[in-house]
Length: 208
Image 1: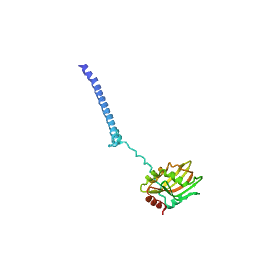
Image 2: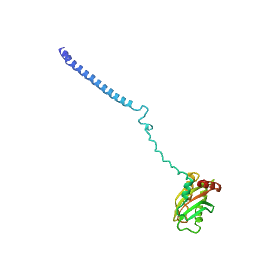
Image 3: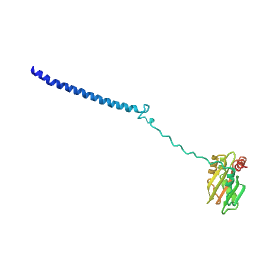
Image 4: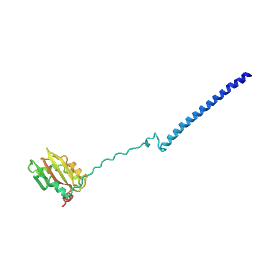
């Protein structure tokens, strides 16, 4: 009987202390878990509710850089056309000339050695591309052309003043492979397509 009483006196306080420690530990674990959950909740609340972290569509898409736009040169005025036609030291000049159906007006060239009937040889070389030239302007047109030639090649070719930049580009492409009969610096008005439309365009180009 005495031993049982002594056992209760010694064990019960210790047992109570152990239970208290377990309870405190459990409370601490719950507090830490609550704190962790609170941090996760705060982090989640700061995110955009409409965004999905793993959704590629939610990523920012950079806009493509705008491509430069090519601007066509302005159509020359009659005074500018007149100035371009005035080739310095020109020794070949013809108000109107044609060869093999190809027509030119206000032809001016500064040439070195020039073959006999040089103008006919020159226009005849351009006339080899007449079909392609006429196709650029089915209703007839005219353009100011300037170029240099050497070693049977035409270089620095510039075509302006036709009805549109597209026609200018078409004419330049058609003439690009012209075999020049002599070296020179030249300028002229090129008439292409039906005569009526070409004549009207040539007059307008010169302000006549």
